Amino acid sequence: MSSSTTSTPQVLSLHALNRAALPIVDLAAPEEAPRILYDACRDFGFFYLINHGVPQALIDDMLAESKAFFSLPLGEKEKVSVRHNKINRGYTAFEEETLDPTRQTRGDTKEGFYLGREVAMESEEARSNPLHGPNVWPDPVKLPRWRPVMNAYFTALSSLGLRTVRLLLRAVGLPEHHLDDAFTRPMAALRLLHYSTQASNPSEGVYAAGAHTDYGMFTFLMTDHTPGLQVWRGGAEQEDGSWQAVPPVEGAFIVNLGDMLQRWTNDVFKSTAHRVVIQEATEEGRYSAPFFYEPNFDTLVACLPGFVKKGEVPRHVPVKSGEYLLGKYRHTHRDFVEKADDNNTLENHAGLHTQAK
Ligand SMILES: O=C(O)CCC(=O)C(=O)O
Ligand SMILES: [Fe+2]
Image (cartoon, protein in one colour):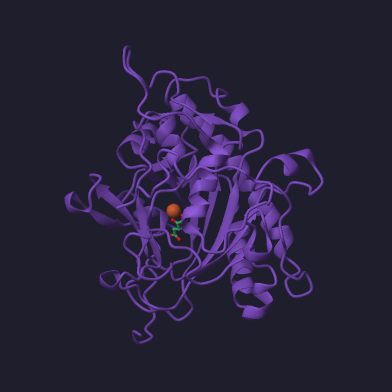
């Protein structure tokens, strides 16, 4: 175990942005935003998003409540474990997830909590769709602000998700409402994460989060001041590129594209591999919160108009959004349990194996 040192916070301020590692999409600059977004999606698959309209106070509250939850005794956290839940909501313990089974000797050194879009238990939507239903909540006596804060953050990020989808459609020259039908019941998920205090050790296969690509449309990542996120720059193989650190930037979301957006655009836009490597032991561990914005369960993700040349065929077979996601969860989560009536079997579906390098 490494000695306990505190890593220096490396959060960049807004005026350091022009030296930052990634393109910056500014939602307050509607003239330039579509072009910068297009280039970022094609060349990086990652960008910083600023002037996004989510109040800093809400972001701070979300991170503070997340920290309060992870500070509870393990027994209290286990009461809301995903192991007791058939729609993947609740607490995931340290090492429960292994994002890169090919390289990791242990699970990710992080614990987490999944929240999704709230769907009433008895509704037709919950009955007929895997992964749909009500959230689970920590004890409101212990954490009275938790539920309202998480609900408010979830709502704000869902709006930002749709807004970003529409901006992307404008950027590719399609009507901005072209995909609205695919996001009427989005499979949005907020994942609170707490990384352990230990340093990662890639040569021994110990990662804070193993290399992976995200699965859906966009991921909006908020983190505390502790660095750790790295993005793959280069080709598909680890030999012909390198990992680039992406530092947290004050008030900015780090946004990346998921596999479904890559498939929708016939690989023109990139679902880029990333991982978390913590260089030095920290006193409290690192806190982050990715918000995954994915299309409706039933949306068939098939090449968008304009992304395949005349006479050519799309590079991917169409895939149903929810089934793609289920296949990924089965592959990476030790404690994933499914609804008994869920007979989706997608193990053989194209693209289910980790693409990350
Ligand atoms: O915590 C981070 O910085 C990244 C987490 C991540 O990539 C994920 O959960 O998909
Ligand atoms: Fe990710």
